[in-house]
Length: 202
Image (tube, rainbow, N blue to C red; front, top):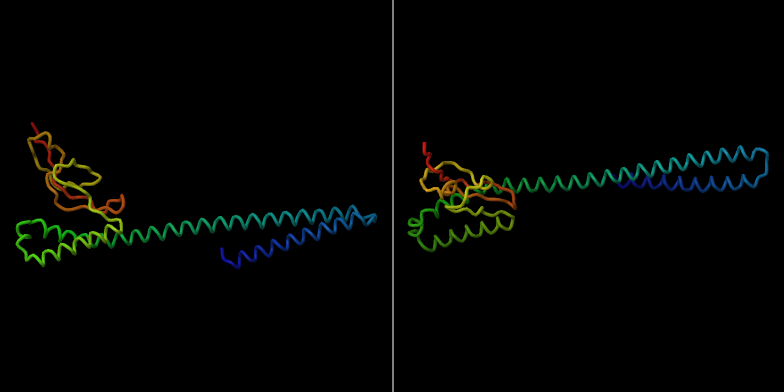
């Protein structure tokens, strides 16, 4: 509700309050008049007063309803803006995930990585840590996963099954193919993995 609408409602309310006072004064005056048509005038004034009170209550109810609607709108709009901001953040972070994947690929071959010139290697590792820090400050963290963990469909995405004779390995992670990330408790991307399954005895 706009300020000028609230002002208009308040003005009308004040006018009705004044009308109520004026009518009450008229009723008191009529009661002291002593004329033969006193009762008729009194009845009309009371009717007028009742109507004014009814209109006053109607204005008040409308004002309260408009105020409640405005507060609900404001609450919904705040929630909508917050959700849009979260979605925009998620989309931006999702676009950064391939960059993190590139770092993972570079670090995966430890022997080759160790052969890279030390100063350059340390610089790249520092930039990677800074990127992870910025993401963490925005609620984004890697999903902890390692070989041997139990497969969890809420956190992991199986892209291949690896048969095994070892019953203890059944439905555990055989290999981490791609890191997963979450923002808060919401999964941005599950960890892509290979999963052990026990060989069929048939």
